[in-house]
Length: 261
Image (tube, rainbow, N blue to C red; front, side, top):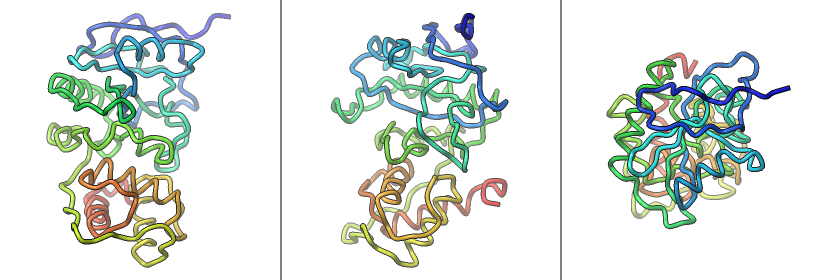
């Protein structure tokens, strides 16, 4: 019995090349894309990234790769389930692969010096994302980082990724963060205060997979890191300070009613 058909035609007009990956399957439970996930490849070159994302033994794939020069390569048809999210969750959904489209942005990542995202690449990511979100009616607050859906495992696309610029172009949900106070250390591991309880409830309401009660433990620390990477990148330290909590409050208050009900 043959497996799912490999991609034969692009889904977006911004695609320059096809590089089919066999690491695909139908989306489970009839799910359709309601989430767009941004990744970085964490590999040294786009050639290496395409190789890994298309090797059956690696068991990973994505829908799109955006090279540093802005070239967009599609690997998996949008109708198919790519293997990019791994163990992850958002708003209680744990099969993010079936509910999302994944964009891998070519960047060596933190382990390889974490270079800036070039202008041509950012321009291409924005154009591609606008197209995907428009066709699938993906809400801005459901354009996420890999670190958002897998806080304990992932930190990509990281603190250098320009979420503010994406939001200004209609992609993603973002507000200017409250600046961190230089002389405030914030709450760390073991803290069990009203602020910690509030942060847990607000993070869960926003969509993060976090328990509703308990002290500031490793799980909450990883979620705070993910939130800071995306929404308060000036200081990423896994601690709960006033800046992080105020920024979180503002974001949740600004969410559409459908997301906070």
